[in-house]
Length: 111
Image (cartoon, rainbow, N blue to C red; front, side, top):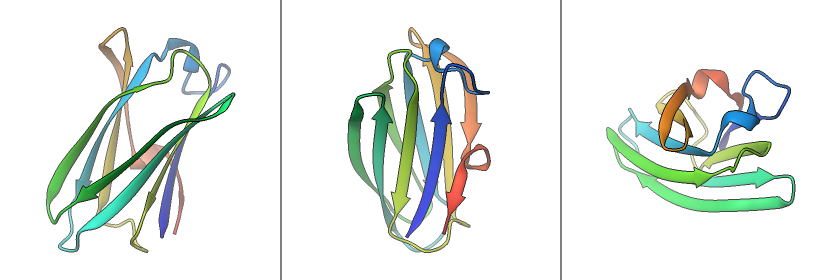
């Protein structure tokens, strides 16, 4: 199991006050397929849950995870033990307009 965490709050480098929604683009650059469980946590607890399958050399999109300008944490959990072939682009949007992009390099990671 491997875990990626992206955290946004009002006073941090990823400012939740500017973020209405997040899109994810997930790439499996390896040869072994994997699943990824996606959790979105906010002030009141879990607000989003999703599950994707990423085949070998496949991109999978997850669109419009609504954060509504509130602090949040996105937790992505894979069923593989190595993140070497897991690429994630977090597309940060405000009113549908892309305002920033972050990658797996900007997350807290656990193997």
